Image (cartoon, rainbow, N blue to C red; front, side, top):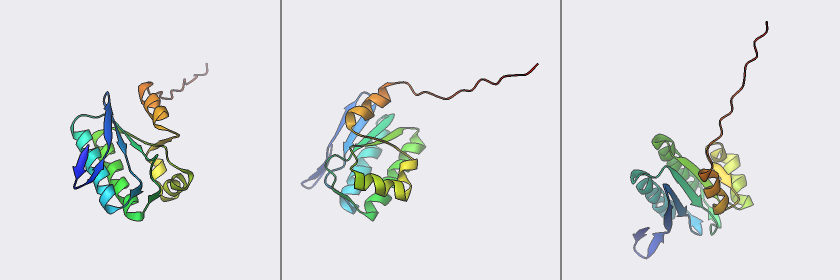
Length: 131
């Protein structure tokens, strides 16, 4: 958990996954704290990040920009990134701005962790050859 003054970002580890709790308002200050915590977790060996938006009421434009930085950091380290507990308004915002193309959005933290626990399924197609 990162603490700056009286403000902190809650986080916890579940195996090689870090769950980061975004807080009630994702703006410049809180967004930077979330970003630092995500990067710290990636540097410590996390292979996946779940950002939990359960308590988040508002994400402003700077918060969205900072989340793009988190997406980039996760992609560069080869880590999976999941947004959980996103309310409808914020989910629509993420969809409209293109963030939803880069992350998985799950209904809650439990679903996010379950999706990370199950092996990734890759699509394969058999090619029929004619005789």
